[in-house]
Image 1 (tube, rainbow, N blue to C red):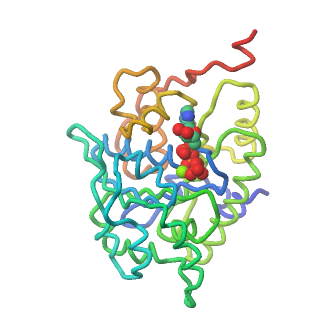
Image 2: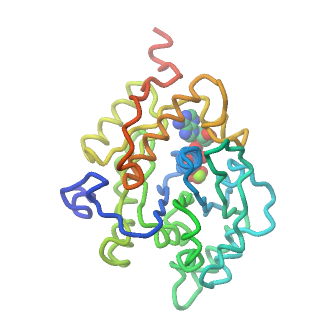
Image 3: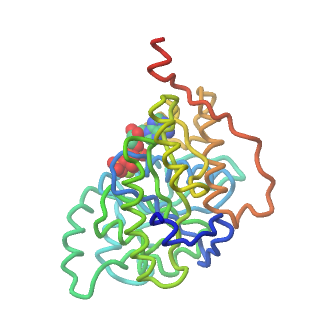
Length: 307
Ligand SMILES: Nc1ncnc2c1ncn2[C@@H]1O[C@H](COP(=O)(O)OP(=O)(O)OP(=O)(O)O)[C@@H](O)[C@H]1O
Ligand SMILES: [Mg+2]
């Protein structure tokens, strides 16, 4: 029995999981670096914004990649101040609109921006004698009600910032690449999620699924992807393919849905639409499935390119 089955039980589809919080809050997590947590957070924010869903993105990573991907530069106040303040609802004071352009009926996301200074907040939080794992949850108190979705981009560690993200979220989205030993990394983060879920009580935190990002056409990628499917079955969500358009959108600080006629952009946007439906099933319960997504990545496999 893997950690998932021990934690979630045998039932599995997201709609059966009984999410119960008033405003869904999804944390993108994996202690492994560079797997696509921020990319998935931005892609989901883009999909939500373009579907007219009011979304707040909280950047909990001192690298601040989500902040710059959302077009926010040198913010005056950041999530660091909210974590320091330790007051209910204080996050409202640090929220700023993203620099994205989103045509109606879409809505521009709000951002609780990050800063490199957040790196020194973590050791300070660790010195709080009454524990500091729920500072973000407290800061979000009453603020989430202004939104229909909160997305929390976590750093590549299992430290107090990620733990704060998991205390503030009602669902953890484990992001992984289909690379060597991906299942081991997933197993480790699931164990952490499981411990926090137990601490928070029945149903407060659940696992939305495993988002496999950067799926390419190499035999290696397919092999590790299949390993994940063998281990986690239906909990493996519709994948995001490797496409040059994805980092391009982030580098230009534009939403993938607004990148224009760049090759692969529409396909990537459609993949994030599908992923959003999987992690937010209650929102799309009455909406028809979109047409199937073209599943071929735009970069050829090295072994195919050379043969
Ligand atoms: N589907 C994709 N196709 C092509 N490139 C991608 C894709 N997803 C992510 N990348 C690129 O891979 C790199 C790592 O992605 P990202 O920053 O989202 O990972 P991360 O898990 O947030 O990293 P960290 O752990 O450092 O926070 C980035 O340069 C990103 O643009
Ligand atoms: Mg990141």
